[in-house]
Every structure is written in C-alpha cells, then in structure tokens.
Length: 317
Image (cartoon, rainbow, N blue to C red):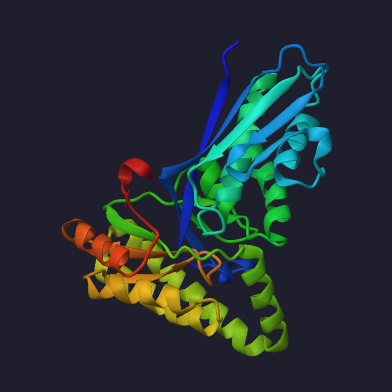
C-alpha cells in the first residue's frame, strides 16, 4: 500500500496580530512556498493500534504511547482517531516534515496539525471535511499557544486569504488586483504564546491604554480589507506602517525587526511591519514587481536569515 500524503501551507498575518485575541479583526494569507507534509503508511508486522510518529526535523521517533497525550503531534493523531472512532486501527507510521520556520509567525504548528489530520483520516478511509479539520486543529493550537485567536488553523485549512474576527463567521477575501509581498526571517525565535501572554499581562495592568491600541489596530485592519482587495498599494503601505507603530506600543518589536523593516522601506517597499507574535520571527514588506529583487537584496544584507516572496492574486483567493 502506497503512503498517503497530505500537505498544508504556511501563513502570514498582514494586519491585526495580538489585537485579534481581543475581538478585533485580522487579515492573513496562505504562503504556499513553505509547507508541512505528513506521510502515513502501514507498519506491517506490528500489532494492531501501533502508531509510530517520526519527525526527524525535531529528532523525534517514538511510538505514540511513549509520548504525552498533550504532545501536539500525538494530540493531532489522537483527536483524529477519537473523532472517527474506527472499529479497528491498523498499525501505521506517520512521518512529518516541514519547510515552515518554527516560532516565526508562519503557522508551523497549525500546518503540521492540519497535515496530520488529513493524512491520518485519509489512511483510516474517512477523510475529514475542512470544517472539522479547522475545528480539531484549533484544539491542538491551544497546546501551542494557550489562547489562540483561531486565525492560523482557518487560513491554513482553507488555503485562502481571510478576514477574521473571533467568534464571527469566517470571511474569505476575493482579491481583484494582485499584490506582492516579501517575508524576511529575523532568525530570532520567540514562541507566540510568550508574547501573547506578556501582552495579556500588560493589558490587564492598564486596560484603558491597551484596549485603545487594540481598537486602533482593528481600525487599521478594517481599512486594509478594502485596500487589499483592490490592490491599493499606497494605502496598504501606509496602513502597514501605522500597524507597526501600534505594535511597537505593545512592546512586541525588537532591534532586529526594526532593522529589517527600515531596510525594506529604504529599498523601496511601500510599507513593512512585523508579522505574528513578534520579538523575532518574520517581517513582511509590500513591494511592487519592479523592486522585489532590490528589497530582497537589502533584507539579506541587513541580516535576514531567509527571504521569500509571495503573490496574492485572484487565482490564490
């Protein structure tokens, strides 16, 4: 029997991180140049129900019963089986690989979970619908992030740009005019749950100030929705820069992030900001097709450890 393979893209938040946890909107897009992959194949000769998880990128090769049930990889497999409740579980091996940077705001954890859910359910013969994949991956996201917004699991599951407000129906964005984006990795890793936790503590100590910042980020995101659909680069660029100023007030930027943002802007980007939890991870920059190469070069020279570009268009929405 051939291996069953499932893939899931990375993601990048364009607007609204941190504020989205407090009921404000956020915009995120899939990034198909990086992916998580799960391969499931029979483990002939092993007893029924035997499940081996291999994720060599993180030097993991264990049977599921040797892992804590709260381990994110084990939890994704267990949730799939508990949901499907197959009469028998044939022994299998699941191999997980990913080209998505870890702890860099690109949805690595959610993408791995989505790939696992799809691969295991296909192996069992009962592929999960997207709605259930998004729901189950959110449960695993709680292990990664404590109080996730819900945006990562949705944009990665559906592979479409989304306008997301926690607790409201998901809105997919129909893009009329293309935009071009550059993603640059600072090389500094800070788990999202750490920055989310710090912001939560700070806002609890100064509700008025922080909620005003969250509202301003939400207003910026709301304006960006129309600009993104129409490909309005000048407006989008200004809004990116405004969003970054607000994120600085939340104390989630750092010198390396600021250095890359300045490099992108100086090289001709229409706007730039951090993306994700902050204090490391990635920055994003909005560019025109004519200056993609010059902005990428400037970011490399400024010390980015990885630089990729992605295009958002009608075909990817």
